[in-house]
Image (cartoon, rainbow, N blue to C red; front, side):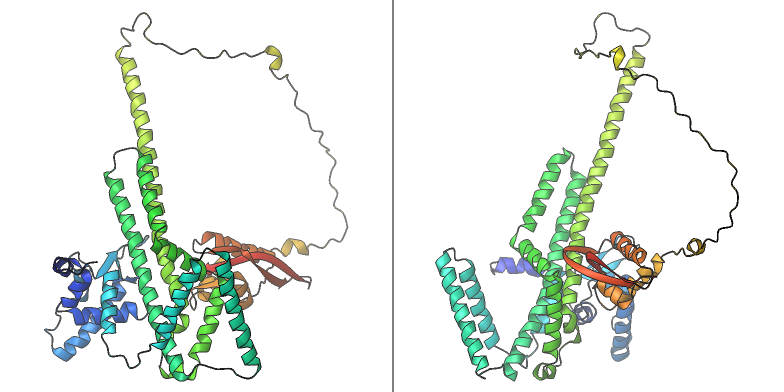
Length: 480
């Protein structure tokens, strides 16, 4: 973007981030939204909860600065911040709810991030950034090389370096990072982790803009639906195949790997326990930042699903309109027939194309087949004196599906996703295979559940006869 005077004047008038920075209430808006949305990585908040939090903030300010400070109610401030002339918040109604909800706009998050960067940093690291730059250049250079011999030389060089490092470690020469290097790298990790969460909000905003444009075009479209679908799906593919769309898809595939999630959890636990890192007093939410990435990515995926729902609704509406057009044609034919009922036309007034004759041979018709009469035995039943075990009649049981669903929800309160094998480890099967099938039924009813057929889990349970039974099943991942 060129930074000429005309462009900057336009940005000052129209860009929400610039309007926020020059607003008189910028300290209140930025501090409140940073505390409520950015710090806890909260994507969506209901109006009642957000207004209550803002009312507490306004009450504390009025106690300090007098009753004339920020005199309006909290709800009016929220609606003002979400108006088109400011656009610092996005106000919308989620599906199935009549209460408005609020979310940050990407421009507001960028403005808050810029304000956070204005603070004086107690530690500025340069070594880790330089190493990152070198590593990025090396990845681009090697990744774009098409000659096999060059790739082989690079791989052999890496192998020689690894062999030399293994030899040094075996000889007792094992260099470790000092405290300064650890602090520097952790500071860079914290910054990139927060920036990644902000990027998700911008990706979701782009998909939401596509959905809005689709709704506008559907509302004004009067041509053939095939042409509209071709244009919409082409625009959808354009976003998906763009650099941003490909990067998001690659990131999502990488993060959805269970192995990668476990590795991230283990690495975070180990790093946060290091003494130099603990001296920095890191944010406690960094321990589960990869779960925040998953939750933010799910919001972007739901926005893409809204686009599919809108296209399906458009097709249903078009089918209704097509059926109505057919009925109008039939009524017009009936009205024309009634109009000429009194004076039918004479002569050849209609041509019918010749059709193929229908030949039905008499012997092709099936012969009559009389119904078979069943012979019923009318012998009287005599009660016997055999001693039979009737316990099987009273050993029936019913799986409490609501209790299983409650167990899944309680397990997801502490984490964003959990596998079926982990659920059964917390609460073993009590009713055997029937209870396991009930879990699969719950997985099919929840749209956020993922079934990974490339990974196999084993679950075991104790049968009524004392034997241990084991089942192999694809990995089922329950998510919020």
